Image (cartoon, rainbow, N blue to C red):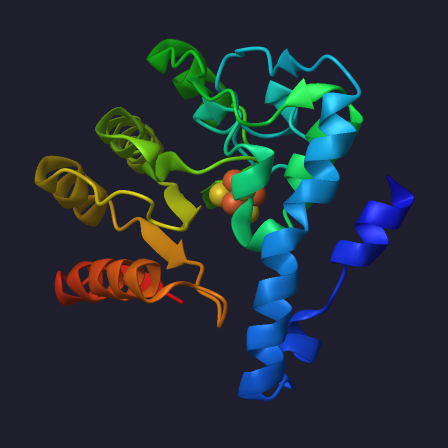
Length: 215
Ligand code: SF4
């Protein structure tokens, strides 16, 4: 596994320094990388990541006060990991989990509200999106809007980090905007034209509505 990690490791700075031809060569190489993971995965029986309750902050069992449990357990299959290089996907493989089995975690509004009330007074925002992404379905976006509203009721804000695999329903978009949720859209020089267009289009639409959208 160490060899796989080393083969996949590169810094954002080194990507920015690449010429277009070298960036294309890197993209080709990275497309081939998942094969190494797949052969590793084939050697062991992988389990689905257990479905859990969405919790917030250290009182909710998260390692940092600013974190919330991802709305989804699981994310993408190894062959589709973002840019072939997702540390969370490789970690899941190391731990014997199939990162590609994606299921919604339980969302109990009362439990979430209780966790919000126990956040430290100076923690004004909560991050959603560190082991998965809210944008895989309408329901993912709807739950993100629900989380934003609960936080807003308690004077906190939601920060979403996403690759916008799917646009939100209009109603979820409006609810997120009303709560001043900040949405950070991850893009890369390795994005396909279709993915990059979708991500920038979403970001533009969100910013037009006078909310916070950050690339
Ligand atoms: S969406 Fe995030 S967690 Fe999922 S594979 Fe991509 S980088 Fe990893």
